[in-house]
Image (cartoon, rainbow, N blue to C red; front, side):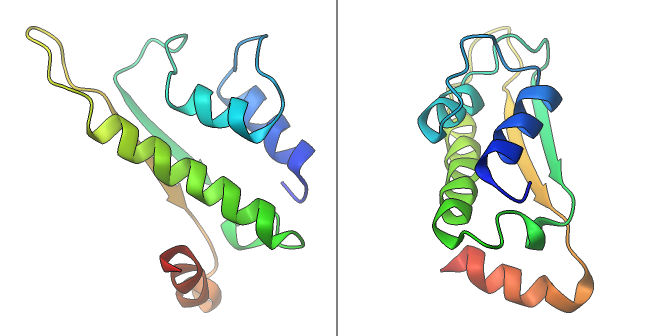
Length: 109
């Protein structure tokens, strides 16, 4: 996921995004907040080598990380409905130990 096309392609393929996916940041954000086409109540998104994702484009990288954070917050505040299990969304960013603290600082900023 070295560029935005790579990011959108990975999400499209891994999550089997709907055909109406717009191949842009607002569309990805919308899809991460919906996920109705996946028959699941709990979502765990794992990104390998997160330190390398969009590393040449800090602005785009920030948009991606914000979209993931926004999706997690969105799912966390969904109401409990009687007779239905509450859905959850979590994203795990994996990276080598030597860059972990740097990535944490970036995510906190």
